[in-house]
Length: 316
Image (cartoon, rainbow, N blue to C red; front, top):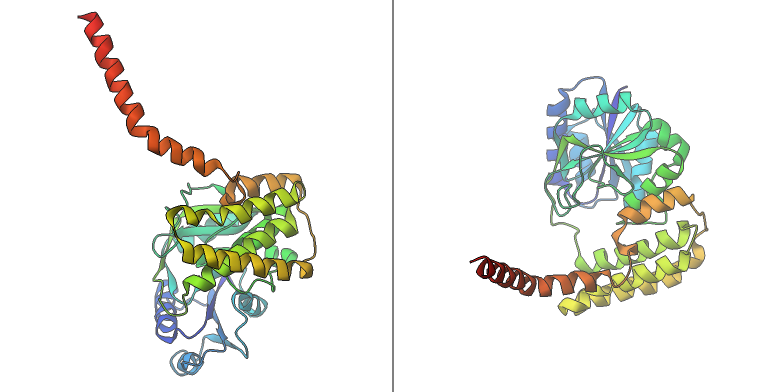
């Protein structure tokens, strides 16, 4: 089988049904594709609706909500050479065959990050360029090579939600594969408001960003832990005290959780690529230089204008 669409759902019945509808229309029910749904213990009738409307779709009913690691249940069941990873509220809009053909040719690519054109996080926001090597990717639209999954494994079971893609991408790169961006396959993230919480986002993001550098950095490990911690407090500059408090709660969660993490340092080359792309681990006070540059910008412009005028006066 060419590819399996693997989708995890939690209490988004309407969105899930739309994703299935759009995905079937895209593949025209070709036997080369299958749809695998993992329902994360939904209480809104999602599983029952899939059974009634799409009995040919593979449905896995997870008895408890395990968050992002539920995708691993779908990967184990999927039969495709490639796993097309989607959220319950995202769908491929165009370019799927081009992306799969790219994977066929480029065996060194373990994960292909697709072009997310809408939603809270987009490829444009992240300033990716076509063919760029990445580590993290946007989880609502990617292609995961089966053979890479069989070697590296799926999403980490200790990360319930958020930043999971950086952990998986880091392990994929360290195993000798590449995570690469493919602009030619567009994914629309409809971004349902259901199950989205600012507090949960900030707590999990901070906890997991700290956990990744603590678990995987092979050199200057604690320096990067402190960088991530301080960078997560920068919101206080905009007097965003609520999110800053949530970030602090995430740090507390990290301190409680870190004793359960097994230290598995990556190679220096993998760490170098990761640090080039992972903004929270950048120098803590780099933002002061940017702020200062922004504040002085108008004065520098005015100075250049006055200097040009003076030079012109001398010529006259």
